[in-house]
Image (tube, rainbow, N blue to C red; front, side, top):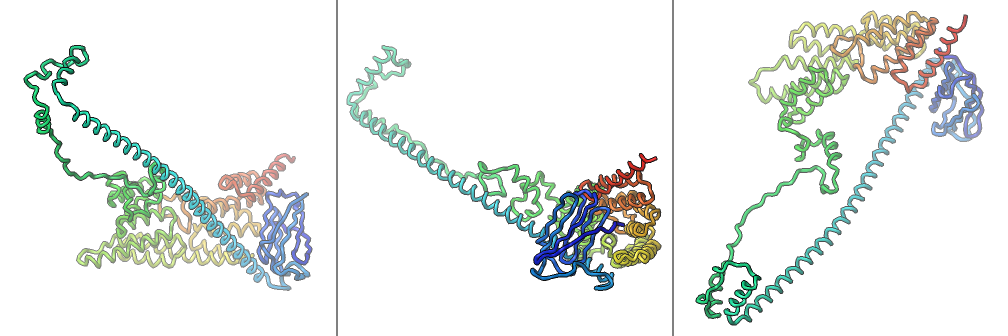
Length: 565
């Protein structure tokens, strides 16, 4: 149990100021929590809790640590109001249970406030991202506008060059026509050609030279040339088919980042199944076949890769949303991953799909085995959520359909868990009210119904720590850690709401159990064993400052104990 710390305080017209000595505690180990009516200052091994008589403005809090002294200043909710005293007195102003309830309400208010702040920060971050995207799109639009202008200028320049070339060709043709009309005597042409051959200007076959008897009158020659002029036939018509690579993003290839686009499409492909661009992310026609995708999910399941199996079943269900067998298999994967709500929803959808199919096909036989499987898996999801009464109903219904004796055993186990859970919830209430003897009795009752109810074991260890029953606390923590160690997730034999291996909740429960056993071992004087437990807990969460401070304190005590005679 933490020690009570000493403090002093004073008030001004607008704020209250609390001052205390840290008694050698490292500043990094100090934790200050401020709500409207409750202040908690933790500086291990001491704790100061202040149940304020008036409300304060949480937004106007600040504290500083200097020369081993902590000074906390908090603005008053009503400026200028005189308090006279700082806190309520137990028994005089209110009972202890009322005070504890007031503290709990203050903690919940603070938790809700932090949640709202986080949500607002998330929304602001999304708005900033959208604004940045719009700015980027504007820049890209301006760049494209500049490119279009350059393209238009280049096109105009190219067209000018083409038209100039056409004019030159036309002018040259006119000149050739004029030269042709000036020729009167074709004999001159033949004589000129003979002179060129004799002078070596032309290297032509002499048989190709025009003979004298071939020379005719110029007008006759012109008529023959006109008769021999042959024009090419008109071009045949045809249809040219041009295909383009389909792309989700309507950007030109020169301005595109194909790799980033492909990554985005792969990540968001499940939202594009109704889009014509769906085929972009596919590598083969098999990936459009739900049966092939389900078989891949079955392969992942056999290998124990439940996350990949879930993705494969989800891809199959994008194509065929009302496939009961696929929904049942995905629910089984979600049970292994601790996704209780998702598993229950899939079982509900599978049962609805079965009923819809039977309405459409009334002549078909009802698949009782699949129906029982869906109901049993929904019951398992209810057990994981702690809804044991609903689980009992489903297990009993599934056993009536399939007549499987194992389902009856599951129903009986759910009944034991329901009784154990009721007793545990009562014990937790006693513990919060610091009625530790009543809490221990209630925890004993819970464990009498189910000895391996792991959360009841861990919480009974905390209650035993509170009354200095260190040996019993060590035994309870060791039993709980043994259950965690044996629960590998390979079957559904573990009892109680145990989070799946690898989940954050599972890591947190193991960490707290190790820390409690370490504290109990320290209470028994087994400091080196306590250090080992705290080291193991620190490995799970190296960022926990309080855990690190407790570990350093234990190391110092263990070292001092070893060096003392």
